[in-house]
Image (cartoon, rainbow, N blue to C red):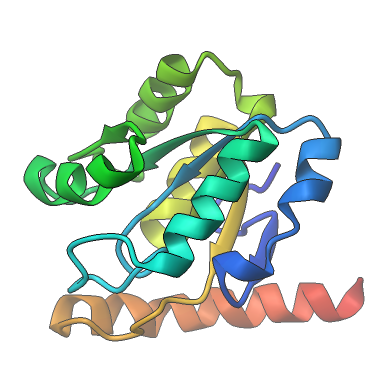
Length: 168
Protein backbone atom coordinates (compact mmCIF):
# COMPACT_ATOMS: atom_id res chain seq x y z
CA UNK A 1 0.00 0.00 0.00
CA UNK A 2 1.02 3.57 -0.55
CA UNK A 3 2.55 5.57 2.23
CA UNK A 4 2.02 9.15 3.20
CA UNK A 5 1.20 11.30 0.22
CA UNK A 6 2.16 8.83 -2.51
CA UNK A 7 -0.63 6.79 -4.13
CA UNK A 8 -0.26 3.19 -5.19
CA UNK A 9 -1.26 4.20 -8.72
CA UNK A 10 -1.70 7.43 -10.65
CA UNK A 11 -3.89 7.59 -13.76
CA UNK A 12 -5.61 10.24 -15.86
CA UNK A 13 -9.19 9.30 -14.96
CA UNK A 14 -11.38 6.61 -13.42
CA UNK A 15 -11.85 5.25 -16.95
CA UNK A 16 -8.14 4.38 -17.13
CA UNK A 17 -8.21 2.03 -14.13
CA UNK A 18 -8.07 -1.70 -14.87
CA UNK A 19 -10.70 -2.77 -12.36
CA UNK A 20 -10.68 -6.31 -13.81
CA UNK A 21 -7.02 -6.76 -12.92
CA UNK A 22 -7.64 -5.35 -9.45
CA UNK A 23 -10.50 -7.83 -8.97
CA UNK A 24 -8.10 -10.65 -9.92
CA UNK A 25 -5.72 -9.36 -7.23
CA UNK A 26 -8.40 -9.81 -4.58
CA UNK A 27 -9.92 -6.35 -4.26
CA UNK A 28 -13.67 -6.45 -3.59
CA UNK A 29 -14.66 -2.90 -2.68
CA UNK A 30 -14.10 0.55 -4.14
CA UNK A 31 -14.48 3.76 -2.21
CA UNK A 32 -14.85 6.78 -4.48
CA UNK A 33 -14.44 10.46 -3.87
CA UNK A 34 -17.19 12.24 -5.85
CA UNK A 35 -16.25 15.84 -6.64
CA UNK A 36 -13.68 16.13 -9.39
CA UNK A 37 -13.08 12.38 -9.36
CA UNK A 38 -16.32 11.05 -10.87
CA UNK A 39 -17.93 14.34 -11.93
CA UNK A 40 -16.98 17.99 -11.60
CA UNK A 41 -18.09 19.69 -8.39
CA UNK A 42 -20.93 21.54 -10.14
CA UNK A 43 -22.62 18.38 -11.42
CA UNK A 44 -25.46 17.44 -9.08
CA UNK A 45 -26.24 13.99 -10.50
CA UNK A 46 -24.10 11.26 -12.05
CA UNK A 47 -23.92 11.43 -15.83
CA UNK A 48 -24.35 8.51 -18.24
CA UNK A 49 -20.64 7.61 -18.35
CA UNK A 50 -20.35 7.42 -14.56
CA UNK A 51 -23.61 5.47 -14.32
CA UNK A 52 -22.36 2.98 -16.91
CA UNK A 53 -18.97 2.56 -15.20
CA UNK A 54 -20.43 2.03 -11.74
CA UNK A 55 -23.04 -0.38 -13.13
CA UNK A 56 -20.27 -2.42 -14.75
CA UNK A 57 -18.32 -2.48 -11.47
CA UNK A 58 -21.43 -3.62 -9.61
CA UNK A 59 -21.94 -6.38 -12.21
CA UNK A 60 -18.31 -7.41 -11.72
CA UNK A 61 -19.08 -7.93 -8.02
CA UNK A 62 -17.56 -4.85 -6.43
CA UNK A 63 -19.12 -3.26 -3.39
CA UNK A 64 -18.96 0.52 -3.59
CA UNK A 65 -19.34 3.49 -1.31
CA UNK A 66 -18.90 7.22 -1.86
CA UNK A 67 -16.68 8.99 0.63
CA UNK A 68 -17.05 12.76 0.56
CA UNK A 69 -16.01 15.71 2.65
CA UNK A 70 -19.02 17.49 1.17
CA UNK A 71 -22.28 17.92 3.05
CA UNK A 72 -24.80 15.12 3.36
CA UNK A 73 -27.37 16.71 1.05
CA UNK A 74 -24.99 17.05 -1.92
CA UNK A 75 -23.46 13.59 -1.47
CA UNK A 76 -26.81 11.84 -0.91
CA UNK A 77 -28.36 13.51 -3.98
CA UNK A 78 -25.47 12.26 -6.12
CA UNK A 79 -25.56 8.73 -4.68
CA UNK A 80 -29.32 8.15 -4.66
CA UNK A 81 -29.90 7.29 -8.36
CA UNK A 82 -27.02 4.80 -8.18
CA UNK A 83 -28.18 3.18 -4.92
CA UNK A 84 -24.63 3.44 -3.59
CA UNK A 85 -24.09 4.20 0.11
CA UNK A 86 -22.34 7.41 1.03
CA UNK A 87 -20.27 8.63 3.95
CA UNK A 88 -20.63 12.43 3.90
CA UNK A 89 -18.62 14.88 5.96
CA UNK A 90 -15.96 12.16 6.06
CA UNK A 91 -13.26 14.51 7.39
CA UNK A 92 -10.63 13.13 5.03
CA UNK A 93 -7.71 12.64 5.60
CA UNK A 94 -8.91 11.10 8.84
CA UNK A 95 -9.10 7.31 8.35
CA UNK A 96 -12.39 7.17 10.28
CA UNK A 97 -14.63 7.68 7.23
CA UNK A 98 -12.71 5.05 5.27
CA UNK A 99 -13.16 2.58 8.12
CA UNK A 100 -16.88 3.37 8.34
CA UNK A 101 -17.25 2.71 4.61
CA UNK A 102 -15.36 -0.58 4.83
CA UNK A 103 -17.49 -1.67 7.78
CA UNK A 104 -20.63 -0.80 5.82
CA UNK A 105 -19.38 -2.94 2.93
CA UNK A 106 -18.05 -5.76 5.11
CA UNK A 107 -14.50 -5.64 3.75
CA UNK A 108 -11.00 -5.25 5.13
CA UNK A 109 -8.39 -2.70 4.05
CA UNK A 110 -6.56 -5.39 2.05
CA UNK A 111 -9.71 -5.82 -0.09
CA UNK A 112 -10.37 -2.12 -0.58
CA UNK A 113 -9.45 0.46 -3.22
CA UNK A 114 -9.86 4.19 -2.82
CA UNK A 115 -10.06 6.48 -5.87
CA UNK A 116 -9.72 10.24 -5.47
CA UNK A 117 -8.28 13.38 -7.02
CA UNK A 118 -6.64 15.11 -4.04
CA UNK A 119 -3.33 14.14 -2.52
CA UNK A 120 -3.66 15.90 0.85
CA UNK A 121 -7.13 14.55 1.63
CA UNK A 122 -8.02 11.52 -0.48
CA UNK A 123 -4.67 9.79 -0.86
CA UNK A 124 -3.28 10.65 2.56
CA UNK A 125 -6.51 9.44 4.19
CA UNK A 126 -6.60 6.24 2.14
CA UNK A 127 -2.99 5.47 2.98
CA UNK A 128 -3.67 6.12 6.66
CA UNK A 129 -6.59 3.66 6.44
CA UNK A 130 -4.34 1.04 4.82
CA UNK A 131 -6.22 0.74 1.52
CA UNK A 132 -4.92 0.64 -2.05
CA UNK A 133 -4.98 4.24 -3.27
CA UNK A 134 -5.43 5.48 -6.81
CA UNK A 135 -4.95 9.15 -7.65
CA UNK A 136 -6.77 10.48 -10.70
CA UNK A 137 -6.26 13.84 -12.33
CA UNK A 138 -8.97 16.28 -11.25
CA UNK A 139 -11.72 16.89 -13.76
CA UNK A 140 -11.52 20.64 -12.99
CA UNK A 141 -8.08 21.45 -11.57
CA UNK A 142 -8.89 24.80 -9.94
CA UNK A 143 -12.31 25.15 -8.35
CA UNK A 144 -11.66 28.16 -6.08
CA UNK A 145 -8.82 29.99 -4.34
CA UNK A 146 -8.49 27.38 -1.58
CA UNK A 147 -8.11 24.58 -4.13
CA UNK A 148 -5.74 26.67 -6.22
CA UNK A 149 -3.36 26.83 -3.25
CA UNK A 150 -3.77 23.10 -2.52
CA UNK A 151 -3.17 22.18 -6.16
CA UNK A 152 -0.03 24.35 -6.15
CA UNK A 153 1.48 22.28 -3.34
CA UNK A 154 0.26 19.02 -4.89
CA UNK A 155 2.49 19.73 -7.90
CA UNK A 156 5.57 19.00 -5.79
CA UNK A 157 4.22 15.57 -4.85
CA UNK A 158 3.13 14.91 -8.45
CA UNK A 159 6.71 15.51 -9.62
CA UNK A 160 7.89 12.80 -7.22
CA UNK A 161 5.15 10.44 -8.42
CA UNK A 162 6.09 11.00 -12.07
CA UNK A 163 9.79 10.39 -11.32
CA UNK A 164 8.88 7.16 -9.56
CA UNK A 165 6.72 6.04 -12.50
CA UNK A 166 9.56 6.70 -14.93
CA UNK A 167 11.87 4.39 -12.96
CA UNK A 168 9.50 1.41 -13.11
